Length: 298
Length: 245
Ligand SMILES: Nc1ncnc2c1ncn2[C@@H]1O[C@H](COP(=O)(O)OP(=O)(O)OP(=O)(O)O)[C@@H](O)[C@H]1O
Ligand SMILES: [Mg+2]
Image (cartoon, each protein chain N blue to C red):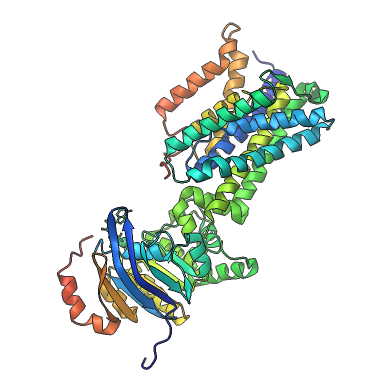
């Protein structure tokens, strides 16, 4: 049986992992919603965040500066990615854009390999992250607590932005009906740049949290984050922002649950088991657990 | 009115518009003066929607020019056309179903910077359309067809357009609602609005329009004062045309 203390710990772990996945899924979904494209170079934004943190650490920056610098780099990289790689292909087919994003991912990984190193490098994080705090009789890790807190705050702020601001309303309109949004005056280029900027912001925040867990970076660091983002947003119904958040938390909870309950021999395959369960869910509900069917965009 | 006609606010000069190999408009010309209601009539597939979409910047003419108050309008993108003063009430209404009524109206003013005035105008619209006021926080997708049409018109008004393009605003609405929509258009005229109105409801359109153009297979086949067209000629033309929908 699980003790209340253990349960509380696992709950925080699930919320912490879930909020990273939610941020990642939102970042991917945001661009999909507006442009109808899956940006598989999204994972490389996490890698760029990580290398920026490493670079700043090597120059003696304290962790908060590393974190802010990493997020900033991801935002800039995301905006540039759209301007350089995707804008010239505006209006191209889904498949063309998909393969272009693979190419961008591949290219960036090669640049990391050539310019930095193909080997993993440690990213220093505060030792405080390894500590645990005691709440009553329950001990909870500092990092999972910070992660869940940062994740929740980012989600709340983003929700407010999407609901309250004029730009947020314009983005929601554009993801419902891009042509009509332009007809009422929404500037196409601006709303697309904004979607990529927010996507980069989310990748950056999730990246800082992710690297704080893994404490290392290598050229392929972005692979697992993009995979989890993809799975979570498909569970939530692609392009559905609320679904992406729900899908992220669902995936986080599922992985933590499997980690805690699977027998030791299968434990290394927890992620694969999670993927299997997700595939089974999608077989029954292709539109995702939370989504209505989303029509393909032009 | 007699004497020198005023310079038209909107002037379409011999435009040709094609979808790939399919030419939908062949050298169409028309003029709209400030404060006028001009109707564009014609059977299904005549090119009415194509005309409005071209004026709104969503399509580019192959040939010909479009002028708004002395400035070239053809070749610009839709978001720019809105800023120049063209607002569209598109075919099929096309409100944003997942946005609330109020958000749809705010979006209509996205091209404007004067936030104070926008607030006041939304409140003004809510007193003009009390039903929309009651449902301001409701997703637009939950409104009835007539309410969505009111919202679509309200959204276009929020852009403070110089010319409003309406594509079949009465389509698919119950007769009593159609009456309300036309009453609204008449009311807009009273406030000095300039309207270019595409309609399949010929009688109602000619009742409120000053002038009308009749399109058929991408060409203007007749035009003139609405009163003249309302009698005789047009009726005969229309009787020969399919009105099936
Ligand atoms: N996207 C498109 N691609 C190709 N052809 C099109 C397209 N849209 C319209 N057309 C063609 O252009 C012509 C004019 O169409 P349009 O929609 O402008 O007519 P309409 O007068 O608005 O008709 P309706 O009364 O049915 O709304 C038609 O022959 C139509 O088939
Ligand atoms: Mg039409």
